[in-house]
Image 1 (tube, rainbow, N blue to C red):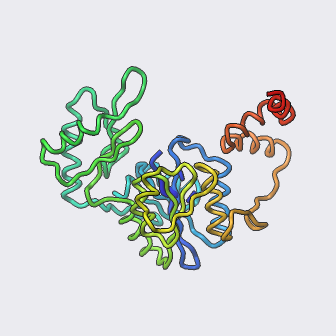
Image 2: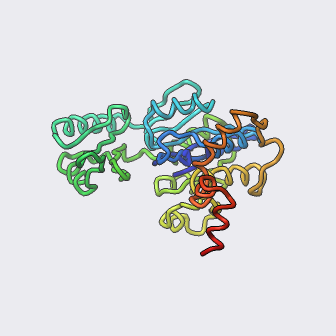
Image 3: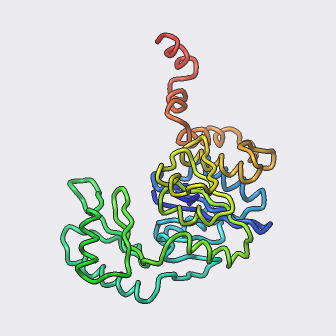
Length: 301
């Protein structure tokens, strides 16, 4: 992920942000939350905005999903489909070349004639394909797709393997290239980026400051080499909130400007319930059984 810095350290997503002081922050949306907007994610966006950043989203999700999230979080721009297309202040900009788009159309036609291949129609500037094994959605074998592209002369495409799908994009499309163009459009002199997968390395390597949540993959750290990469203590969206604090304050702490108005009554209860998703496994257990009960259990062991 590249912090798809609001998932959106959110499965295969990234978020980017520009700064009114000519900075930019890249973040990611974590798809494992399936669109779930956690308290930590909202707090991360709020922190960035209140400290002059203008967060934007960069993701592997479809353009439709990215523009929907931009509207939901009041973001001015977003990169979708692994850098194949971007949306900036209401304008859609296709970044795939004419040859790449033509080969993607040909690939869709080939896949449409295969009984076991399901193509997601929401992806218009790339191809997302998967299959069902019983009731479970699964990715097609990577080697199968590589062979299919080679056999049909589709040499202007590349494959991105996901947990339960394959994404096929133009060979020149990646998040880093898209973010550079977005940085120019936003006239930002500095870029901050956060991510946790190999598809985010193209952005992390360009950033003036690069961050990752604790769940960052080892191959991402290795790919960064000697370039500085701040790794948060927390995972996923809690890690993004920690990264937002570091980007805004230089340390992983909040400040008075970051804090929302304290909720009351039913609103406070609802926020506590939503906040459970951001807690660690021990924290969730403690919330369910009570602090005293958990302490007694640990002591008894």
